Amino acid sequence: MHEMGLALEIIDIATASIPADMAGARVARVNLAVGRMSAVVPESLRFCFEVARRDTPLEGAELHIREIPVTARCKDCRHLWAIDEPVFRCPICESATIEIVSGRELDIQSIEIQEQDA
Amino acid sequence: MPFSLLYTPVRRHHDHGRPHHHPHDHPGPDPAAGHGGSRKIKVVRRVLDANDRMAQANRQFFGAKGIFVLNVMSSPGSGKTTTLIRTLAALMPALRCAVIVGDICSTFDADQLSVSGAPVVQVNTDEFGGDCHLAAHVIERAAAELPLDALDLLIVENVGNLVCPAEFDIGEDCRVVVLSTTEGEEKPIKYPLMFRECDAALLNKIDLLPYLDYDLAQTLANMAQIHPGMPVFQVSAKTGEGFEAWISWLRERVAAKKG
Image 1 (tube, rainbow over the protein chains, first blue to last red):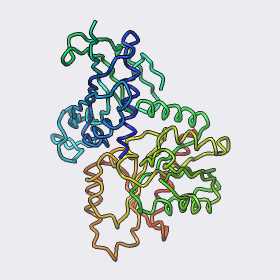
Image 2 (image 1 turned 90 degrees about the vertical axis):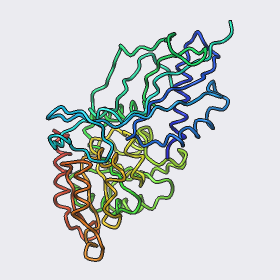
Image 3 (image 1 turned 45 degrees about the vertical axis):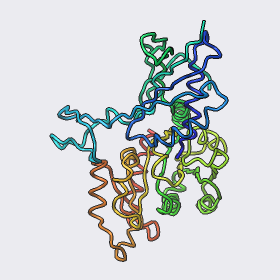
Image 4 (image 1 turned 180 degrees about the vertical axis):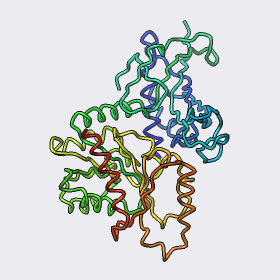
């Protein structure tokens, strides 16, 4: 529901990440990792991004979203598994002491800047 | 937001209180990759980085003042405000309490809560774009209205929503979710992030159990499936049933922070 705010943050971070020696360059693509357990709907985020990128160095940029599965590790038996149904208990030893290893991401991983003709 | 070359790591602040710095995460052009004549620049930053930093600053600020911050979340209509009014009545005046309450608009909740005698700040998120949650900077601004040197417990009544508030750290010490019997048994399964992120749950409106086709055991099993071991307090904010256990649980935590 807060995808517009996220889109604006993405544009801010990406704009600030353009190296000084490339000032004025356009960002062609933003690579984003979104965990399946984050409160984000990729379609909504993409839609908001397309609205918010106007009149910024990201005008026309593609938002590439890589969805990250939810994985957990059992702190007792060290079993590592992908959580694909909402059960947060180790399937091997039934321990409840688990840590979420991935699936909470909402990270900009890289930006791609169009090379300007020399 | 100022740009800094010190990148924060790809992680949430689950481990409250410890700032992370990964100096090896320095960015730089990666000439090997990139699509069709473009230059790829490694960034590695959480989109919520700005919020997480502000939350961390809040946590340090409230920590220095010895104020315990409780973030209360729920869906709309779970009885969150009534639960808090009864909670305040039980804690005050032994504990000096204040409330920040978030709604998209209106001051109904603040009007009700102020009867408790606690200072209340109503935040209307429509001035922040109708936000579905309270963000860390909003808490910072609202807290400035409160008597922070005469406070033991700051309760934040978040915007009624089981999705977004779970994602936003506000610098709290503890998170609880209020769920009510009229909402059905499946809420924990439908909103796993919320129930994973909370330290305790209050199951409200248990006075209605005789009138509902409600499977209490199923609800508790669903909670245990999402967050095994999380305390669940069965309460009625209307009759006061079940409040003793919840109040003593909360008191213990506030006292532990005071040291």
